[in-house]
View 1 (cartoon, rainbow over the protein chains, first blue to last red):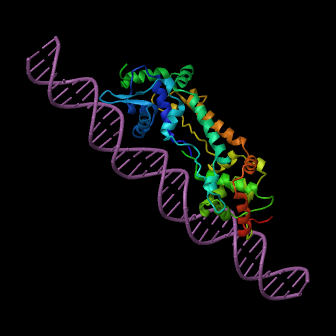
View 2 (tube, rainbow over the protein chains, first blue to last red):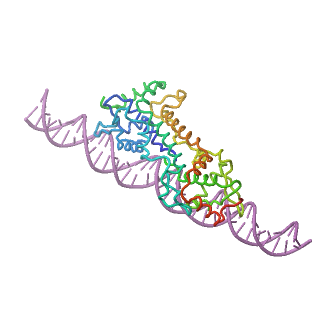
View 3 (tube, chains in turn yellow, blue, cyan, purple):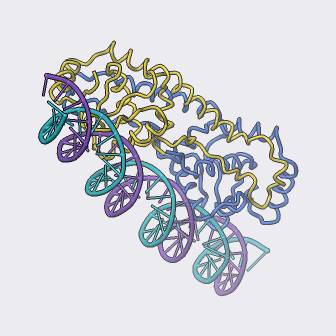
Length: 166
Length: 166
DNA sequence: GATTATTTACTCGGATAGGATGTGTCCGAGTGGCTTAGG
DNA sequence: CCTAAGCCACTCGGACACATCCTATCCGAGTAAATAATC
């Protein structure tokens, strides 16, 4: 029942993309290496984000990945749902309509009280995730830098030449 | 990432147990048949609830299952967590500490902003589930009866003799 | 008739397969930049 | 020197294995009731 590990990857990757200057792009394998992740599987997660219209892929020799929309228009929920195939946490199979004592289907109009609670919790979960955008994450990330990481990142980017289109 | 189907089973089963008179018990296979579920796998879900101290199992010839605690002391969250092995939805593997640009571990004190958002959403999800107890579910279930189900249930119980210890 | 030992039917619980989903890897199609030949 | 064609390196995307967890099933250990034997 746990979220796929690619959710964490995708969130960190999107945050990194949001930190890049406008018009810049970075290859998927470089983004994976930067985060210490397996490039092959990481690219699969990126594919889902591309399919969802969150990330844009530039093909060709100096291609790479970039955000497809402004960071304000991408919420954490968008990313999570894209990577989890838009599935809800709880699924109601209407077992109350099964069994020897069930009534005719016409008598079941409203969802049962159990499904109501579960869906309410689900909605609250999504609400929190929808409240935070990539721009918010970028803002707090900038406000709370980790010692030396920014410098090391700049050096690594210029050293490897992973950043294109600047 | 979806919750196990046994979550729905366990919730409906616990609600059914909460509807029973004090001191009564019902065999697991009868509870499964009543809900139209596969008895063998259903019993596994019940085992988890027994291990969690939510359901009590009475052994022997006229044994069965019953709630181990008053319905007020069992929340929906308790049941869900028992069936999902107490796991959190999101798991942070601290990938920010990996990769070529990461700083020394001593510099990572607070959780990262991504983990904060995810855990906050997780907490809200749990909060909603913790707010509702089995007693609440029973109350609303009694207030919104489905046409004919109560009568059919009483008839089925006396016909099969599934209810013991009354 | 009451008590006790035995049988028996029925319960839960764990050990054991099968299937779906998440994880991991690889290679090919396609594109844009670089090289090079020509004007 | 400038232009244009061809080559090449590099990109993403999908096709292909492996592992883990969820799903499903069965059978055995153990218990309490029912039964039978005894006092």
